[in-house]
Length: 562
Image 1: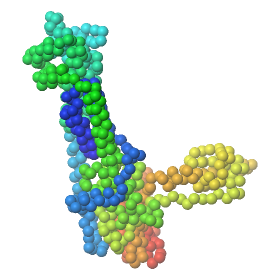
Image 2 (image 1 turned 135 degrees about the horizontal axis):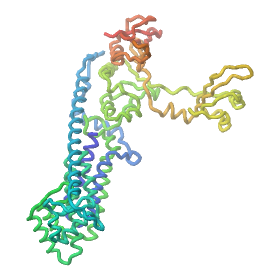
Image 3 (image 1 turned 135 degrees about the vertical axis):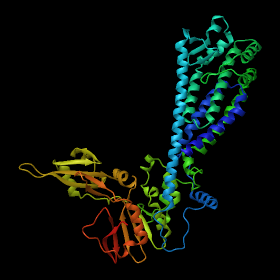
Image 4 (image 1 turned 90 degrees about the vertical axis):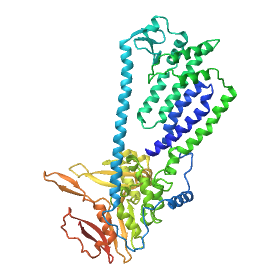
C-alpha cells in the first residue's frame, strides 16, 4: 500500500506540474479537462499494471550491485559470527519489534478510518444542504435544466442540472444573460460530474493534499470552458469582463461543490479570455505527453516496482520473493532449498510485502514471518557445522500401464472412471492410449455378490494434469532436515498436529505451542544428540518427536518443552 501511495503521488505530481507550467497557459480547455481527469485515473492505475511481458526483469548482476551499494549504508540485520555453533536466545528483540510495528499499523488504520468517516459525513452534509435548498426553494422546470429560486443572497451557481439563483435577483430581472449562459454551460457539459469524481478521491485519500490541487485546477478549467462559450457569442469581450469584475466587488458566497467567483479565479479568467493557441503548438504539446506518460508507465508500473523492490523499503535487493527461492534451490532437486544459499532478510522483506492472496499462490514459506525466524538465522550462521535443507513435497513417480491391464480396462463394464479429477464413463478411454497417462490407481468399491461382479474405481491422471497438479503447482513444505559432521541427520515434519478429544467428547485438531520454533532450536543445539529413542507413550502437550538418523539407524526421538 505504501508503495502504491508513493508511486501514484509521484505520477500525480509530475502530471500536475506539467499542467500548471505548460498546459494551463494555453487555450486547450477541452483537452485540459480530459488531461486532468485522465491524469487522476492514470496515476491511480499505473502502480497496479503489470508489464512483465513488455519489460524484462532485472538481471542478477545489477541486482547484486544494488545490494552492495545498499549494504554500504545500511547496518545488516544478520551479524557475522566467528562462533562455530552460535545459539540465538529464544527471547529475541525481533518479535517485540514486530509487535510494535503491528500496533503502530493499527493506530494508522484507526486514524485513517476516523478521517474517512469525517470527510464522508462532511460530503453527505453538503449534499443534504443542496437538497435542502431545492426543497425550500421554488423549482421551475426549464427545457435543459431546473431553475431553483432561493432566498440565500448568493451568486448564481450550479450542481448537476440545477441552477440556483437568488429569488429577488431573478424576479427583478437582475440575472444577466452572460451569467446565465455561463452557468448553463456548466450544466450542459456536466462539469459537476468531474467535481463529484475528484471529491470522491479526496474523501478516499483525504490525507493527500494533491487531490485538493487537482480539484482547484479542474474547477478553474471549467470556468475557462464556460467563459469561452460566452465570449464566442459576443463581438466584444470587454463588457463581459467588466461584469465579472463587478461581481467580484459585490457579495460572494463560496460553495464547495460549485464553481465560485473570486478575485484570483477571475483574474486568471480575464487573462485566458484573450488567449489563443495555434493548432501547430497544440499538436506539439500533445505529442510531448507521449514520452512523459511512457516514462511514468515504465517507472511506476507494478512490474518495475517489484523489480526494484520499491527501493523505498528497508533497502533490500531488487527482486521478488520467488527469485530468492530459485537462487537457493539445490542443484540435485527443484524441491529442496539449501538454507546457506538463501538470502533470509531479502526474502523476508519480499515475502512480507505480499498480500494474503499472493502468499497463497507463491512457494509456501511462512517461517519467514514466524517466531522461528530467529532460529532459522541461527542455523544459517552455523552453516559450517549444520547443513539445513527445506524439503518441499516432490511430485509422485510416474507410472507405466502394462498393455494387458489397459486392454482389460477397455473391455471392462464394471469400472468407474475418474479422469483428471472428473467422473467419466468408461467409454472415454477409447479416446486415449495407455501412454497418455502419468498415474493410475485401481481400488475396489463394491465386493462381489451373487450374480454381480466386483466393482472397481479407476483413477487416471494425464501428463498435462500431472504437470499442473504436481510440478508447476504451488510448492508446499514437507520437512526441514539438518545434517551434522558426525553423520547424524535430524528431520522435523513441517506441520505437527494431533487429533484430540476435548472435554465435550468432540475431536479437534491440536497444534503443539511454538512447535516449529522449539524444533528448530533443538536441531540448532543438537539437543537430541544423547536422547534415547521415543517410547510408545508420550505426552503430546509437553513434547514432540524428531526423526533422527544415528549410526545409520533411523529412529524417533522425543524432545520435551521447557
